Image (cartoon, rainbow, N blue to C red; front, top):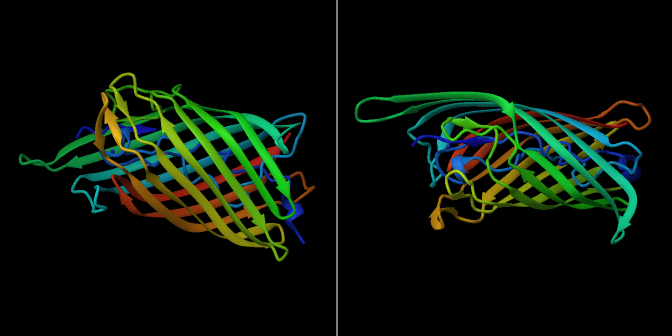
Length: 319
């Protein structure tokens, strides 16, 4: 999504769990201030992974399916010093996405090999009130359309007692709806390559620590010559397994680590935000029921983007 603001025991019990990251490279791009990456929003979604972040589906003849619905709302923008912007904002982004992940029995470097794809649809609404010497200037826009397609040509899963790890490469293609004259856009109009790593550790007492890390490397927007700087995204969850449920705390940490460039000129504009909130997951082996995750995150320490709240629910199952 882009905003174009006119001056945005039992470890083994969880082995079949489907990774949230892959069930959700679909989600939501919480939009932002007028600066920091193009349009002020992260290029790929976050608030995706929590419990089971390092666990991919088991090898199977048919792909695993992940579904995710997310709602993000923000009523403030933050400047490059983290101060509240005088520009008034009311932003809502609702998204639904589907992921298909196929893990094979082929191995590479001791890991099971898999691949997949993710396709989101976003419903976005933004209203701005911009102070001017002549009085407030109001702008509004909304769009419901397909977001950028994400392809996962390589996903490698390593498994050991109590420890699950994977590495993956994701390529986000500029297939989403994009119009440079619109205030909001579900598509980014450029390519992004994303190497990532995730792990889940589940102790004998049922205590879990999970995290995922990725680096977004962005190409240039061919319509305006804008190239967003590289972005670091890390998501995590810590909690305890209680029967079929895992309960605890989750969140994410996002920082832009490279400056934006326009027609080759460095313009800075780095963004960042953090979030924390309760996280819950459900998994009942052999029941035929899907794995389910639910979290509610509140953002803080935002700069050059919006600051708001996110609620997300996900479900995953193997056909």
